[in-house]
Length: 230
Image (cartoon, rainbow, N blue to C red):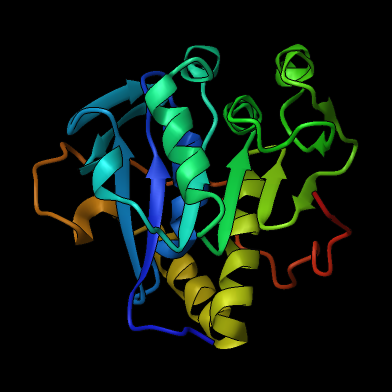
């Protein structure tokens, strides 16, 4: 069960991050009153990438002990893997957070931080060569857990990982509430609620439909996972 009233969920944002990957991760936590979603990056403000923009709400040195860390993928992953400030932040928060989850090409950033050396990683096939350059190899599994770090191939599996983390932190009741919220938002008459609306009121432009592929499963098929110790 939740051990505190608020669980801070930090979303690592960088130029070129995919809005679709962000949405797949944060769709679940957006439904939970216990989850405080915060976009973290090197400069407060909008950051653009495939699918649209996201908003950085806090700097790296302002978010030092998040409970959950999310590292989405995007076309900017190779450049982000060389971002010293981003990598330093990931190394600093990884040992103390409950869970660190990386999806798609975002796994390259975590590998570049030195947290996945010699381990197989679930990721997008485009990241194969980059991962190998940081000492990791691509797993055939859709989701791989190494201690408190979970990697996944992206898109729908990112949402599954978010549900899995919710299950482990808040139990079945939290998962049921998240799924109910997702189902409400997917009704045709319901416009998309962007995940940062609860954090700070700001104009975001016209509403757009949610990704129809992001459907919460009745059963979380990846529990239990085969856990790889570091």
